[in-house]
Length: 118
Image 1 (cartoon, rainbow, N blue to C red):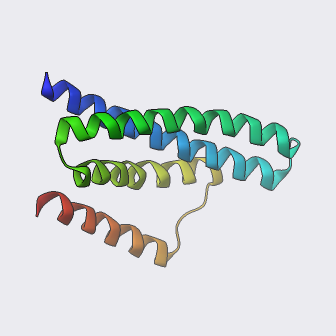
Image 2: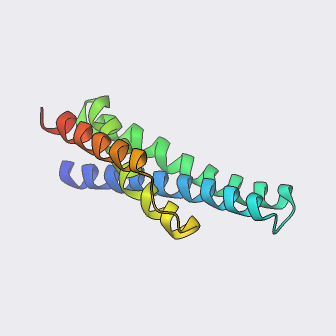
Image 3: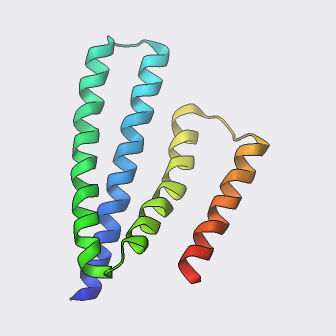
């Protein structure tokens, strides 16, 4: 049962972070190209990010029960951002990262691995 709870926590946090980043990207892109009035875009992304917040809060609450350590829950959150955000940035904006961004990404991934295994 404890294993299923940990898997649920991973899913909740991953989906919450993905929805949150998705809402941010939709807002940024829609506002950049001015395809719709600001308030219409804002309301749409606000509703999405509210749902994302619910997933994240539930994931953190259950994560403390499952892992008994907030640092593990934080690492799950950061890892999901590290995985999802570059994918969504490329899908939405079709931009490749600069050298500095690639170096930052690699250092972030290394830091994540160190925090998990040490």
